[in-house]
Amino acid sequence: MNNAGGVLCRFNKNVSRSILKKLIAANRLPILKSLLLAAYTLLILAISVTPIYAHSIPKTVVFFGDSTTAHLAVRGGIPKEQVWSGAQSTVRFTDVNTSRCVHLSSGEDLTLSQAVSKVKPAVLVITLGVSGGAGVLSERDFKAIYSRMLCSVKQASPATKIYVQSILPLSDKSVKYYKKITKESVVEANRWIKEVCASLGVPYINTHDLLTDANGYLKEEYQNDEYMHLTSKAYEVILSNVGKSISNN
Image 1 (cartoon, rainbow, N blue to C red):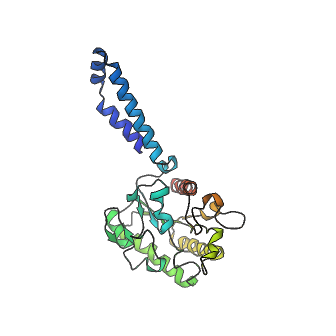
Image 2: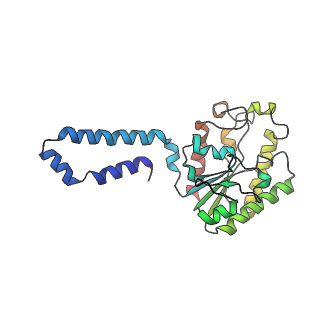
Image 3: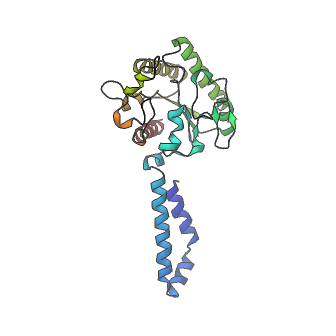
């Protein structure tokens, strides 16, 4: 149940039928009106705090990845406990199988396999491969790291359903800062990821193409900065696409 539904549920439980009768009998309608107004205000606040599109993502879904994933808890409306990233809100791809790259909302730092083994999420959505991966590693090394990561998750929690989302596009202004990471290397890495997923039977979610403009860069309205970080509007597209993929599988 989303936050708004929880507010209504608690209000309905607290204001029982007998209390309503007593208020009416005692001519306390102003008090009743005040209670209803307070409940309505809480409902509006609950809806405004969490974007509507975030409500479509079940509480059983956990997202893991680098900074674009970490920002789901900032601009995407996803609760912190459902968003896994490193303590510095990023994950270096080359270290994903060896480092404590999951900083839980409890403050605990674990390896990905340890976190999956402990929490056992029903669904894990992974978005990874740009930091230290795309444009840097060879196809063989990139695929080896990705395969090892997915296999470690499967072994740690066989019941967890894994989804892998594509690396997301770069801002057109990123060429000023990135030498090896290019729009072409991102497309290439996504092809490798898709091939790894196919070999392991893991659903691949192509969100990259939904966010790009005619030149292959992140659309202007989705750019939060000059790198690859995203606006709330971009997260609306991402969560909608992820939600549809989960529903279809």
